[in-house]
Image 1 (cartoon, protein in one colour):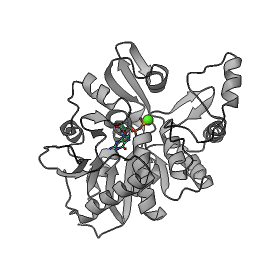
Image 2: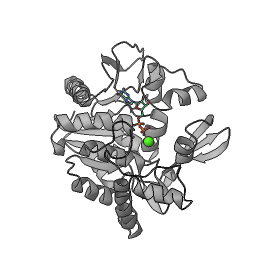
Image 3: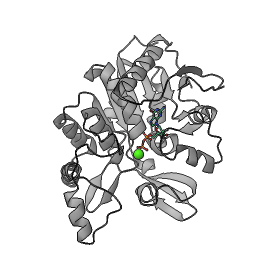
Image 4: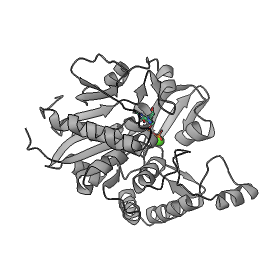
Amino acid sequence: MRAAGRHIVALCGGVGGARLAHGLAQCLAPDDLTVIVNTGDDFEHCGLSISPDLDTVLYTLAGVANREQGWGRSGETLGVMDALKALGGPDWFLLGDKDIALHLIRTEALRAGTALSAVMAQLAKALGIGPALVPMSDQPVRTMVDTADGLLAFQDYFVARRCAPVVTAIRFDGAAVARPAPAALAALQRPDLAGIVFCPSNPWLSMDPILAVPGMRDLVRGAGVPVLAVSPLIGGQAVKGPTAKIMAKLGLACTNEAIAAHYAGLIDHLVIDTGDNCTAPGLTISQRDILMRDEPDRARLAAEILDILTGSSTAPHGD
Ligand code: GDP
Ligand code: CA
C-alpha cells in the first residue's frame, strides 16, 4: 500500500468534465491536480489545429469560458467568422476572434514541431492556470463515428450534423500508435498520487479515446490508488449532449449499471445522483447531488469526491 499522497489525476472531456475539473481546481493546491484531457475531438479547420476539449477545460479553469453556449470564451466577437462567411468560407464551425488567437498560436507551434502538451502548458500559463492541463497524448488520435450515413469525422457528426446520424460504432484512429503524453504518464506514476477521478464526461466519446491510448488502462489499474467515476446520468438521462442517445444506439440501457459495466475493472467507486440507484457488485456506490448548476456546486461536489477518496482504502484493484 502506498503512503497517503495528495495528488489527484482527473480524466475528462469537454463541458461536463471541465465543470468537475474546475471544482477540483478550487479545492486543491495547483501542484496537487493534473487534468488529462481527451484529444479525440481534435481536428484541422481552415488551416487551424483545433482541440475543442482541451480548450473548453482551459477556458473553464481560467474563468473565461462562455457559460451559456458551453464552448468558447465569454465576451467573444465574431469578426473573423462574419468576414469568412461573407467570403464564402465554411460557417458550420463557429470560431470567436479571441479563440482564433489561441488556435493560431497552437497551429504555429505544432507546425514548428512543438509537442501539443508543451504548447498547451504555455497557453495554460498565459491564462494563469495553476493545475497541470495535459492532453492524453502528443500523437494525433481522431475519433471517427460510424453511422447509418457512413463514416464521419467527429466534428462532422457532432457539430455539422448535430449528432443526428444513427451511430453504429465508434473508433479512434491513430490510438494504436499513440503514447500517453509524458506529463500524463508522470502524473499517473507520481509517488504522491492519492486518487484518480473519471469526470462525468461522455464515456464513449470523451473517456474512451483517453482509455484507448495504449498503456493508459494499465496506468490507471496499476496506480494502486482509488479510482472514482462520477456518472454523467441523472434520472436515466444525460445532463447534456448525446450520451443517452449513443447508449441507446449501442443497445445499452441508459442506466448507472451500464456506466459501471463500461468502467468495470478500472474504477472502485461510482458516484451517482441522490435520487438514483445502482447495483454493481464490487463497486462502492455513493449518492450525492451530482448536478453542477453553478460554481459553488462544482466545488461542493469536488470536495465530496475528495472526501470519498480520502476515506477509501488504497487496496489495489484489478489484476
Ligand atoms: P463534451 O466533450 O463537451 O461533450 O463534454 P463531456 O464529454 O466532458 O461532457 C458531456 C457529459 O457531461 C454528458 O454526458 C453530460 O450528461 C455530463 N454532464 C454535463 N454537466 C453535468 C453535471 O452537472 N453533472 C453530471 N453528473 N454530468 C454532467
Ligand atoms: Ca468533446
